[in-house]
Structures are given as structure tokens and as C-alpha cells.
Amino acid sequence: MTDFDLILVGGGLQSSLMALAVLDRRPGLRLALVERDERLGGNHTWCFHGPDVAAEDAAWLEPLVVRRWPSCEVAFPGRRRMLGLPYVAVTSDRLDEVVGRRVRESTGSVVMTGTAAVGVGAERVELAGGHVLRAPAVIDARGPLPAATDGCGFQKFLGLELRLSRPRGDLRPLVMDATVPQRDGFRFLYLLPFAPDRVLLEDTYFSNGPELDRPALRAGILAEAEARGLAVERVVREEEGVLPMPWRQAATAAGEAFTGGYRGGWFHPATGYSFPAAVRLARRLAEILPRAPQASDWDSLRDEHERQAAFGRLLNRLLFTWVEPGERWRVFERFYGLPEETIARFYAMRTSWVDRGRILLGSRPPGLLPGRLLERWRAG
Ligand SMILES: Cc1cc2nc3c(=O)[nH]c(=O)nc-3n(C[C@H](O)[C@H](O)[C@H](O)COP(=O)(O)OP(=O)(O)OC[C@H]3O[C@@H](n4cnc5c(N)ncnc54)[C@H](O)[C@@H]3O)c2cc1C
Image (tube, rainbow, N blue to C red):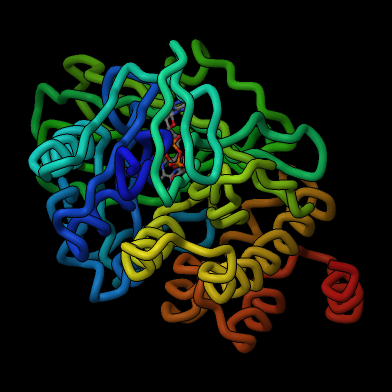
């Protein structure tokens, strides 16, 4: 007799999506969600583009959505473009509330917050304190391992959620504003207007080093807010991230349990987004259960993901090893001149061979000729 049908270790994005997908498709399944912190989901705003998610997943994801915009914008010194791609936001607060409630309401399922796992095996999880949970299926989604320091660049950012004293109804999501002074690699601002009096403003860098100068970034964001005519009443919340942008394939965590999320390499190497991959993995798990998953159950999804990830790593190699830091913005300016469907498939990790050719040729770094490009592609 096992305690549960499924144990999800780490109550972040990946496990939370798995819990929702599984309880949607397999109501009554007994699951345990084990999270070290006191609440699920940490401190994040997760966004994704509408086409990142298949229509069949929209219904079970919907309760997580705090805001959906019909389009989003990018800006560069020589290009400003409105993309007709819906942009969707999920917050940690909403995730904690929705996932916590859904699991607790399901008979036989539990949310174990404030509980660290110290040992994770294929069918058992040992908790701090020595208690052991057993299930025929265990997923290890304890989040990113410490980032490697070589073979990758970094996407690093700090964001402030601002309460405005003068509401602004005219703002649209600005997902990349690279008209700001470039430093420490490629730099852009990111603005999400959650409400007329509440915006998230982030300062993001694609850099060769992971360091974040927090006081300077905070001061810079407030100065940018003022320059954009945003009357800041107070800072409501702060979030930050340092995400690896690898050009070498990282070893994933060794262990017996299947690894999901960032820990298992289920993210887009060139954007840092993991939402699309996490949703696909969650649906796959729901399809497999209640049978105990076998390693081969993940093969086709893993192969498809790896093909797309390899392309992302090639782009990172070009960006971080070929292009001068101060020139990187040009690559993105060119990328955003490509057809909208190509941009959408790139974010969704659904690129075709034609898209990959277009991206390589259409946004290749200045000075990189097609012959050299082909050599580097072959070299991986
Ligand atoms: C601030 C920020 C914003 C991001 N925004 C986006 C975005 O807009 N779109 C996007 O697609 N991606 C985004 N990402 C990237 C990626 O989606 C997130 O990092 C995502 O949270 C990764 O999901 P995960 O489940 O693998 O890990 P996490 O969400 O980090 O979850 C791991 C969980 O495991 C817990 N844990 C760790 N060790 C133990 C243990 N021993 N026992 C029990 N629990 C443990 C942690 O406390 C944590 O809650 C963002 C990343 C950051 C940092």
C-alpha cells in the first residue's frame, strides 16, 4: 500500500502545473505536493504568449491567469512593432491560491508546505525529520540547480511592481524596450500594466556574468519610471532572476526520480521561458497516469524538446561568443523584423526548419556570413 498515487517534489511552477493538469484529467488521484517554503510558487510573475499553449490546455490553465492582453510591443532604436500575439500573466499569489485550493479539495491529496525533501527516489521521498512518503510515481521539480559558470550566458533582471498615484490607462505590455542605454550586454526594459495604477517595470540584461547590482538597478528603474511619466506612489513588490542561457547541454540532475521543470532542462535556452515546456510536460504526465510512468513514456516529448533546445543553444553560442556585448541589441532588432508566425513559433519552441533558417539568416550577428554560420551550426 502506498501513501499516494503521485508525489510532486518542489511546489513551484512545474509541479503546480502538473497538479492542475493531473487533477483535471484524473480527478480522485491521490497526490502529495511537497514544498520547502511556506507557500507555493515563490515570488514570480510568469508570462507566456498565447500560441505557447495548445487549445486543449487553455481550460485548466485559465484559473491561474491574472491578466491577458491581446497584443504586445517591442521597441528598438530603428524599429517599433506591435505584435498581434496575446500575452498572458500568471502570478505566484494566484498560483498559491488556486493550486493550494485545488489540491486540498481533492480527497486523499495534500499540500505539504514548509516541508523540505532531503531524498528523492523513483518511488519514495524522504522528508527532513526522517518521515518517508511512497508513491509509484515521483516527479522531482525542485527548481534550477546552481547555474554553471561556463558554457552559458545569463538573463538577469530586477523588477519593481509600482503603485501609481496618477492612473495611466494608455499603457500596453512592452515586452522588450531596447531604446535604453546599452550596458553589460544586451539590455532592455519590460513593462506590464496590470491595472491603470499598477505596473511591473523590469530592467533586464543578457550578459556574460551573473552579478546583479540591486541598489543601482532599483534606482535606475525608478528613474526610468519618472522619465516615462509614471507617477510612482510606492513600490509594492520586487522580483529578480538570474537565469542561465546555455550554449552547452548541461548535465541534468542525477537521481532516480524523473526530473521536471528547470531542474530537468525543460526550458527555452534562448528566452529563459519555461512555461510552454512545463505545460506540455504536465499534460503528458496527466495522460500517462494512473499507470506508473516508464522512462520511455517521456521519449518523444524529450526528443522534440531537445531538438528545439539545441537550436536555442546555438543562438546563445552566437550571441554570447560572437557578438560584441554593445552590439547585441542589433540581433534582436533584426529578429523582431521577421514574420510574426516565426516569432510565435520561436517562443513556443515549435520552430520549423524554415523558421530556423529565417532566424539565423534574418537576425544573424553583423559580420557573420552564411558560410561561417553553417560551420557553427554543424559544430553545434
Ligand atoms: C523572477 C522570475 C521570473 C520569471 N518569469 C518567467 C516568465 O515570465 N515566463 C517563463 O516562461 N519563465 C519565467 N521564468 C523562468 C522559469 O519559468 C521559472 O524559473 C520557473 O519558476 C521554473 O519552474 P520550476 O518549477 O522548474 O522551478 P521553481 O518555480 O523555482 O520551483 C521549484 C520549487 O522547489 C522548491 N524546493 C527546492 N528545494 C526543495 C526541497 N528540498 N524540498 C521541497 N521543495 C524544494 C522551491 O522552494 C521552489 O518553490 C522566470 C524566472 C524567475 C526567477
